[in-house]
Length: 242
Image (cartoon, rainbow, N blue to C red; front, side, top):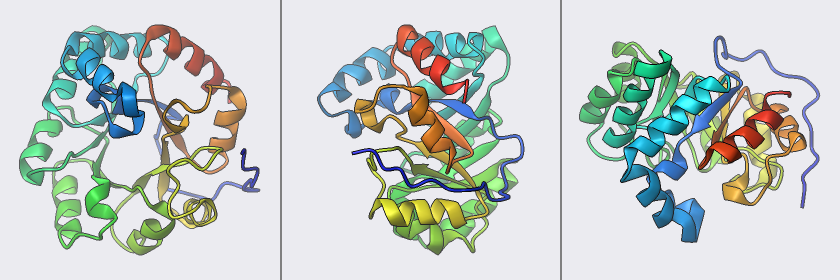
């Protein structure tokens, strides 16, 4: 079912310099959302970093020198190798679970514009959020929050120092917890930038222009996972005209 609630106007949000489209990297780590393909993707990319580097380079060649990176060492190293070929990327990186300080140190070498705290901590309103926000700022980046439940989490975090949210937004409501209505209300009302994740609902949607037009009603940027050069060309040709 395609939801057709549309926002009438964009709010004045903190989105200066945020690219409209980013290459997402959830497939590169074999994220659970891809179900039976997860292990295949992990072997193809995480275990073979040269395949990630190739797609990073191709993305820049197609005009998207921006990446929403999950901050594991193989992905960081693959992006650095791509930057040796293409020049710098705009980087919005999510800190994986584990020791925050050491993971932040790892990704800081990329000089990211945004560093996002993992959803597992944001959705439970972890006691360390304020400390981590300060650490991100001290590292020279802008703090962001990832969430798997934007309808409830964003209103609870809006008084903190986050400058952006990474939240699921797509036309069929995939991952938009606790429900579509509260998610759309939260992303409309926040004054922080919104980066849409899961835009193609883990492969359930085709990369059609109408999908991206819908998402841009609510989000300032879209991070879309890609697994091949052909898929990248098809996806970018639809997204970049919106």
